[in-house]
Amino acid sequence: MDEWVGVVADCLNAEKIAYYKQDTENTKCYKISGFYNPYQQPVKTSLPSGKIKALTGKSPIVFSRELQKDPYFSQFNIAFSIPDKEMEDGCLFLSIPKKILETLSNADLQAFVRESRKFLKLKYELSVVESDRKRYIELFQVTEKFHSSMDTDTILAEIIYTLQRVYPVFEYSLMLSDDDHHNVDLPIKSLQYDAIDDMALDSYVNGQIQIATLWRTNQTLLYAPLRGRQGVYGVLQVIAFANYEFNRSDVEFISLLANTAGSALENAKLYQQSMQSIEELRLINSVSQQLNKSTNVKETVDFLMSQISCSFDAKEIGFIMIQDGKYHLLEGSSPVFEQNEGIRYIDFVNQSFSDNNKESLFISNLNRRYPERGYRFASLMAVPLIQEDALKGFCIVLHEEPYHFSFDMFKLFQSLIYQSGMALTNSMLRERLEKMVITDQLTQLFAKNYLNSRMEESIREDEQGTLILLDIDDFKKVNDTYGHQVGDEILVQVARLIKENIRSTDVGARWGGEELAIYLPGVPLETGEQVAKRLLTAVEKNTNPPITVSCGVSYWNKEMNETAESLFNRADAGLYHAKNLGKNQVVISNTQIKANE
Image (cartoon, rainbow, N blue to C red):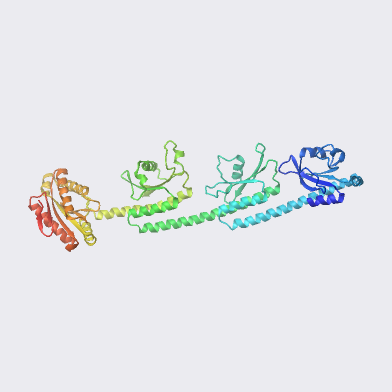
């Protein structure tokens, strides 16, 4: 533009020349675009559009007489209006020598206007071509970047950066329909259907560009859908000044950019979903393999706890089993479920899993659903453990933050629990079966074989130990007097008293008939004797009908070269002497038999 102004100035020997064109950002103003002034006299950089339109409204050529009436134009002696609806609206002001001006006929001036219009139109068309060329270069380059990246944030950033290079004065934002976490530096909004304006929603639903001017906010808004083959992934919002009109080239470029970005986003999301699916399959496969190796419930629960905590960032995890209408917490679950706060969540989930509804629970915000309850943990997922169409229990995970678990997390959690549920149930059944094998069914004490193996293990590994052999006094008389059912009840009562008076590491067993045994690993003789005497008193006071027991006690340490068989024989000898000494007493049989009176 400056070059054209300079050529005109040279041809007409102009002392001063200024070309004003309408400001695209403010239609009430004409802004100087070209200027030539060898005398450096001040020229206004902008003029009100009303003054120029009033000046050139009657004729495209304005002479000195009219120009002198307005101080804005008094320094010029001729002006030319060069309007064209297809290009910029401009006005050329000149100050040329009077003798040169007098040589120019009206035809010359009209010809100048026509040729100037042709030139400016050609210049405009060339600028459009050049602008389109630059835009398509930008589009080509950004398309290459789109297809070379599978990162959604990179694609979104390129959309914004490209638009900022092409239209630096506009503002942009991306309204996305996903719930992923994106780069906080990008102008990204969540596409919430109840919080966006109708145009954005129409663009998202219909997949079409929407344009509107809002005079009250002095804005022109353009919404372009980010459209892929399988759907629309969001909306690009472009904000311009209210007087800006998006032309065909603008709309076409933004539409192409948005569509290309939509396809790239779709590819990136599909790739990420594929990778996520692969990782989920690997996780499930790894979990399945590990669970197949697990032989006890505690080991299985510990492994699942670590996997769930790592995969879902869960704050609290609980495995709850249901039996006979009552539920109990598996060892290894989060301690919160042993407290009243955690029991509230267990009760809530248990009530939700009715006989007719065993669907998994996925609640993003408990406090929004139940505001009156004041839950500390807002996010909840729970999956039932089903066996033969019966509810055997459930797994529950919690987090304080609402919407912490995504729906994809929930689906993976379901798959994980469905896979592990059978293994967990099998582990429990295996432990129950193992316990049945080593447990006397009547007294629920350990069986004789288990007692023998524990004694042999203790003799190998411990420094000392004590064996107590008990026999119910006159048990045949109890059976004859009260019947065998009462006799069985007496055995159960004595077994319960044994459990109440020993540690969890001690072994209470039914040796056979009415004979019971207690092995105390690592316990000295004096302590073993105290336990035996305590049992004598407890049995005499707490059985119905009242009975007594006799006890034989034997002891070993590393210096005695003892075996389980010899230890039992000495305890049996002590029991025999206790019976002969009048029953209801304890006899210690160590290196030699002696009564403990």
